Amino acid sequence: VDTLQRIYFNLFRNYINGLMKFRINIGSKNEVLGGVENQMKGFFSDRFAKARMNVFSLGQPSRALILSNIDSRYLILHELQNENKSYPYEVLFKSMNKYFKDAVSSEYDFITKFFGKMDLYDYIFEKSTILFVENITNYLSNSFDTIGILIVIRNIQLSIEKIKEKNIICLLNYYNKISGLLWERFSFLFNIHLNSVKTADPKVLGGGSDTRPHYITRRYAEFSASLHYLNQDNFQEDKNLINLLGALRTEMGKLLSRLSHNVPTKRERLVFLVNNFDHILSVFSERDIIADDVGWWRSAMDKYIDSFIEIELSYYFSSFINFVKQAHPQIENNNNNNNNN
Image (cartoon, rainbow, N blue to C red; front, side, top):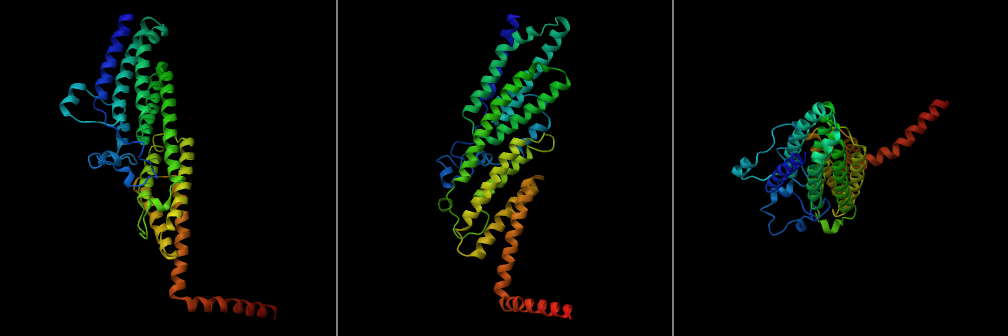
């Protein structure tokens, strides 16, 4: 049993260390939702432009595609060396998880059939389990990739469904432990984004008299749509995530209202708000998002459209509108007099 423990530990350690050499880092502490665009660009900004885009978006092709089949073949180290490619952590985790899960499943079946002692399993994989937990912990300590972390969480949830189907419950404690670590980091990073929007200064963010969708709006639309996408269809809707997204939506609405005051006239402010709200709804529509946020943004946009129509009508038909306003009470008064007679 001691020999088997060492064999698995060395096998997993070599595989994890080998995979981590091919990890690409996505995001940094400066890349926050409400951050100033220029401050998020550094000396190497052009070189890492593609990776930076994925901080707020699932990207194209979607990073969520790896969740479509979590039991697909794991990555082979010598093949990776020949390809000379890098991958985000969720891809490497999927491979590590598959590798670990297959080994545990095989050993679990053997132990239960021939020995019937679950304490043997705990002993054989104790050090290996610690190894995988340490890998997750190290990743989370310097990860600023909120979307990537949620993808890993969804991978674990799908894995739990798989092991329950096969009655391999020995992995549940391990999955519950790393799920807790991942949710803790996710919430921490999400609140950083939330506070960056809440405290954003419209004068610093810029935009001037431009009525087109603000770069903060484009970021928010992609970020929110990505998280909503990972919270529907094959995944059980997480109420905590819904609440977080609702809080972010509220703060984003307030920020857009503050940003609109950078625009000189009331008419242009309404155009700015309608354009920004419409952009958010367009991104949600493209991603087939079905959520309360969609109704909230559409209702708010409709109110601004109504206000814009009022201003336009007042500008071009002011005399006619004044006539109607003056005539309407008189017409109603005459009708009342006729009814009394």
